[in-house]
Amino acid sequence: MTAEDTRERILDTAERLFAQHGIEATSLRAITAEAGVNLAAVHYYFGSKEALVRAVFGRRLGPVNQERMKLLDECEARAGSNPPSLKGIVEALIAPPLRLRGNPAQGGENFCMLMGQLFSESSKWRQVIFAEFGETMSRFPAALKRALPHLPEKELFWKLHFLIGAMAHTLRASGLLVHLSRGQCDPDDVEGTLRRLTAFLVAGLQAPVPPDPGEQS
Image 1: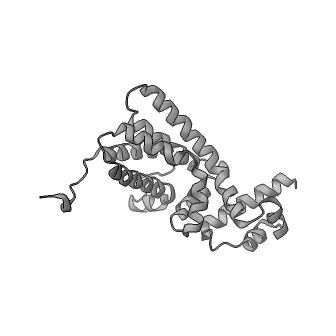
Image 2: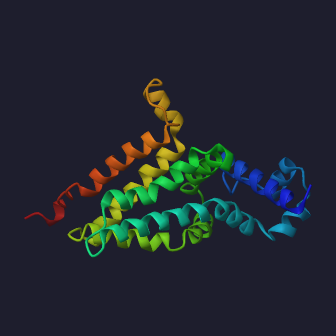
Image 3: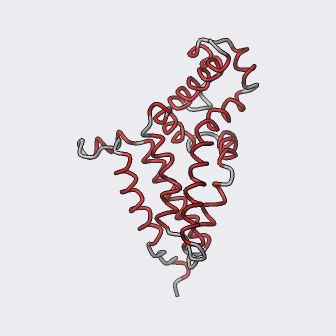
C-alpha cells in the first residue's frame, strides 16, 4: 500500500465514522482501528484531529466550492450590469453538493450525511469547518443582495438561512422523502431534485416579508 493509499483510507474511514457518529464522538483510535492503521500514521499524515477534520471537509468542499464560484461567475457574467438571476444564484449554490450526493464513486452520500452532522456539532468544530467555505460565505450574500436590492439586509440573511436549511435537509434526509411519499418520490433523481428545490427556493426568496407586529401602529 502506498503512502497516498494510506492517507486516502484514513480520510475515507474518518468521513464515514464522522457521518455516522459525529465528529466529537469519534476518536482517533476508532478511526485507526477501522482503517487498519496505527495512530502514528494519523499523526504523520495530519498531525492532529483538527487537521484531519479540515482535510476530510476540504477534500470534498474544495471542488464543490470551486464549482459554485464557477457557476456564480457565469451567472454574474450573463447579467452584465443588471442584477444577477435569482435562479442562477440558487443553482450555483445548491447544484454542486446535490450532484456530489448523486455520485457514490466520489463518496457523496457519506459526505452529505456529514454535512448534516455539521449543524449538530459543537461550536468548536463548526468554526473549524466554516473556515473551509472561503469566499463562498461572502460571495453568495453579496449576489443575493444585488438580485434583491429592495430587501433589508436582516431579511436577506433570514432567507439565506432558510435556503441553506432546505438544502442541508434535502442532502441528508432522502429516506424521509421516500417514506413520506410512499416511494413516489425518488431522491436519487438528482436533476429532478435540483429543478424542484430551485423553484421552491426562488419562490421563497421572492416572497414578501411578513410585517413585524412590533412595528405595526
